[in-house]
Image 1: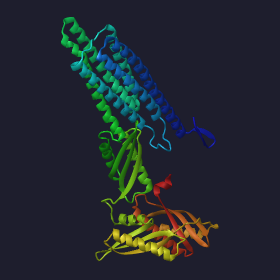
Image 2: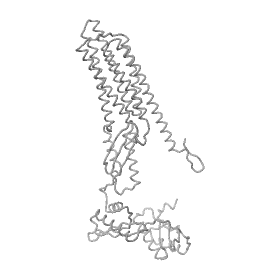
Image 3: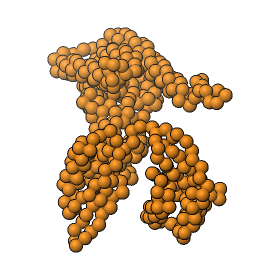
Image 4: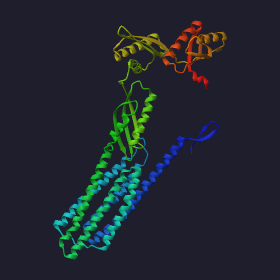
Length: 492
């Protein structure tokens, strides 16, 4: 268990605990996947040996085709085991998306082996149907071997499916599907042996063809399985997205507050893990913090569709239909990496005139600062053509820490300031008055309590009026900072 120091006590570190839990879960997953794949190899080895013995002893093409089928099953099971061992390796510098594609490649190899099996079965079946006759010797042993094969295939296909569904392993899913169809192909072979035995018993020679026909049925089943596996593996190797996942993700994300549009959704898979890349449109005045919060909500929505997905969200600025002239002015300032405030728009004789304050680095010269403002004003005019004139007030943006030389105490001035505050109906009181001398300038800061339901626009007007009155009463004041507080805040 990880710990972090808090004060004087040791407390568990949630992040370290989560990492340890994830590592334990990953190790459990690897152990279960490898264990079930290893058991599948042992079962395939046993079944293949029994089928070859039964096939050669009876001469049954159905059993021999099943034996060959099982031998390729053995190869496929070994490939699956190796692929599971490789695919579980974590991502590294050369394989940033991990090694999960190995499972898809394993399933692709298995598909090829199944098709090779089909070719041989069909070839030998047609030879026995039309070119030569092979004597079949049905026996209880052969039937017992096939029944045993059905039992083992049922057990391992079920075990593989449970683990495959639990960890979404494509290689194990391919094996599970493969062995489920083996049950039916084995049943068809048993039916063929029974019909051959029945033909001998009743002297019905035409039933001797039941064995190669049963083998053809096995080939049909194998082709069907191969086609399903081929589609799944090719989709995975070509980064095919799960059916309907993209549309569902777009619907969920598009309905999130703040998302204007969904430009792009791309999905790729590597083994059991999905990687999703989205581009969403956000309002161009949205801050970095707000866009990050939206990105987190988008990630949560994507993981509702694809649990555990690795999600990358790219944000693109877009102009919203609700933007007013103030929003468009701020957007122009943000494009120029400038901060503006105190924006005022007046309409005179049908024309709009804009005044605003812009903050620039205090170390800039006036010429350089004016160039920045000229570019900004030009950009604002392009973005808001209806503006007739722009007047910009340049302010210096502090870049140094100011050191206060002393705290000044002036009880008479404090009393005058409180009296001025009492002349405003909106002001409840003026308190926490602090006078500081900074670089031979006198700075005033104070708290002003106002009524709770006062509109912010009126609060600002009162602050401005107080600042003017304070500087009139005390011309020595260089800067005045007023902090407004609601009346209920002072009652706590």
